[in-house]
Image 1 (cartoon, rainbow, N blue to C red):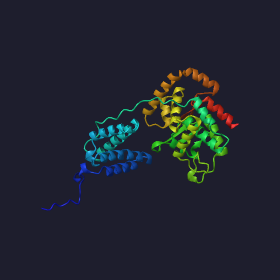
Image 2 (cartoon, rainbow, N blue to C red):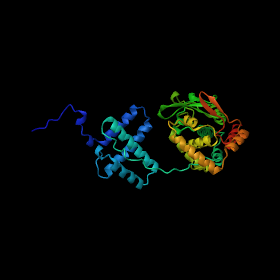
Image 3 (tube, helix red, strand yellow):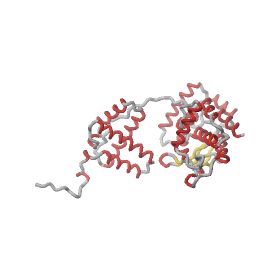
Image 4 (cartoon, rainbow, N blue to C red):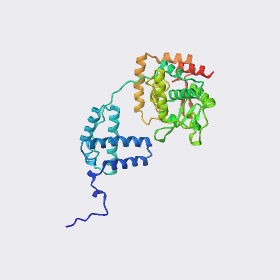
Amino acid sequence: MVKVRRLNLRWYDLDMPNLDLTKLISHFAYSKKAEGKSPKTISWYYEMLLDFVRFLRSTGREAILAELNATSVREFIIHEQQRGVSPYTVQGKVRALKAFTSWLLAEGYTTENLLAVVKLPKVPTRIVEPLTDAEIDKLISAQNPLTSLGCRNIAILVTLLDTGLRLGELCTLRFEDAHIEEAYLKVLGKGSKERVVPIGTLAQKVLWRYVFHFRPEPVGESDNYVFLTLDGKCLQPNAVKLLLNRWGKRAGVPRLHAHLCRHTYATNFLSHKCGDVFRLKLILGHSTLEMVNRYVHYASAQDMINGLSHHRWITSASTNLGDTKSIAYSGVPRVEACTTRTKLLSISWRASK
């Protein structure tokens, strides 16, 4: 008897266990795109999940839904660890897989969460030391503030240290969103969430110097960002990464990178009692307190290392940098000089003369 293939397939007629994982991953990526996730986030999910597909194929297994289970994922974790992959990267891959299996359940591809029993691999907790006065001194001294390139680069560093912006946020900061005179920046962060970030007097001085004397005219309206290349084009994040990397090595601070500046801002903000964790969360653009609580740990450890006293710093700050009280602006506190180093301020003033 000839078996007739059903043309009008129903959902439960699909052979779920044998569905191709690469097709499911593509469906997952399109779902994330429809949710408004950024291209960078979607690309991250895609690469993390494809690594698991490659692992299955390398072990002679088919990349099908039936092979996605707790056992195979644990094997994948051990495989990545033995390859010497960073613990943070391994944890990220497991996070992506768990998000994928949660989506599979929600979409009806599975009747249970396939990785509910799989725990995230632990990652080491390391204390990341913020940039020191001496390191900032070296970095500033390695640039010539009397040139277009040097002035722009110093403005980039000061902005990162004084605001805690992410690298992508710095590069996509539109000129019309930089309210330098009013001492705040309007930033478009992760998830297309807009926030207001206060800037101190030092950042104002350095930005004004760059804008008035050295910032080129943008090539077109679409290139009207604060920080531009010398020929007036948008400065790309990878270009800034390379810039900071070379700058750090040349200045004797090879550990310099954009996120270290953000870390330095957050740690100093808490160490110098510029505000509470809720205020810091708003300024940094975090959706939860999880990451901010890490900065609390880092700041406490840094205080113990340096033997800093909150009262001693406040006295010093009022003498050297002026009033440190918070001034409310548009609902976002402006913290004058709390994260600005005395050394950096004096160098900037000398350069602006």
